[in-house]
Image (tube, rainbow, N blue to C red; front, side, top):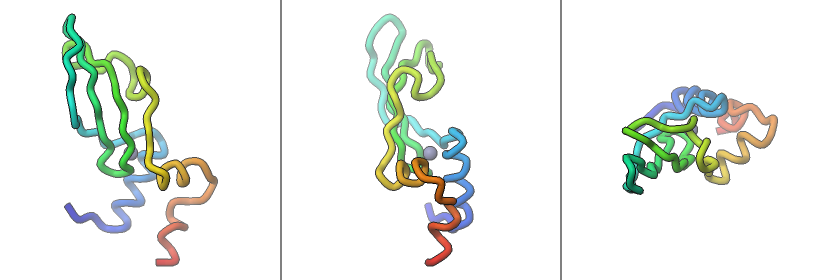
Length: 90
Ligand SMILES: [Zn+2]
């Protein structure tokens, strides 16, 4: 899937607000109708593991185990640098 620079910036801004585009990458049955579910954000590459009960996330995403992000995503979120600025020089 090829996306434009503007689509990427818009996506990253949504991620920054906590609205990740999460896709399920693995499910692990832990019994009693509960599963550990690994999800990956297609936009920023963050990974989160949650406990799902009856196919629903029991907590908000990241509630059971903190979301983990790649270095570039942490850098974007950790500093006051505007995401758009990263792409301006290129
Ligand atoms: Zn994201």
